[in-house]
Amino acid sequence: MLNLIFLGPPGAGKGTQSQRLAQRFAIPQLSTGDILRRAVAEGSPLGKQAKALMDAGKLVPDEVVNAIVEEALARPEARRGFLLDGYPRTVAQATALDEMLARRGRKLDYVVSLDVPVEVLVDRLSGRLTCPKDGSTYHARTNPPKRPGLCDSDSTPLVQRPDDQPGAVRRRLAEYQNKTALLTDYYKPRGVLRTIEGVGTPEDVEGRIVSALRDNLTAGPANP
Image (cartoon, rainbow, N blue to C red):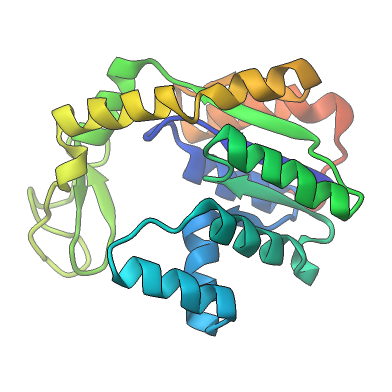
């Protein structure tokens, strides 16, 4: 069993590395957005409550998010472990997670924190282009579309999301630093925190993560 949390600022590559590690260790990747969308789609009582709040343009409060995460951790596919991506975001949520794991006799094995310089994050995010039709993403410099400004799959004009503009990116990073970054101080005394350099190819970063965990883990079905 392997229970992991991924931390890192916007643009650090959490989503990419979460997918790779979830596949490598044969555990589900549980992102906050996916968990909420699944609860809403299934029409559970918590999902209905979350949908009503989101439809009204309100933030989903911690008690609802925590309860939906706990439901996800109770699913059969999470019995062998899990990888949480995007949760917890605050120390209050981390405390709630500790309590829900304790109720099940489980604990966190590792908290992986991706460390990327601010200027690299701004470059990654401010160069991002999105297809409004199918959601595919490109990067003006590192992953450009085949035809400038057009989606490869359907030729839809690409757009830059407002929150990917440089000024907005810096505000997002400042918000992360003020809230979520406090989690590293929360987890460090426990000896479970592993800070990984997040600059390089996805393969390079994955290799660093696996190397940091290798001494204590036996991987399940893995990619070669």
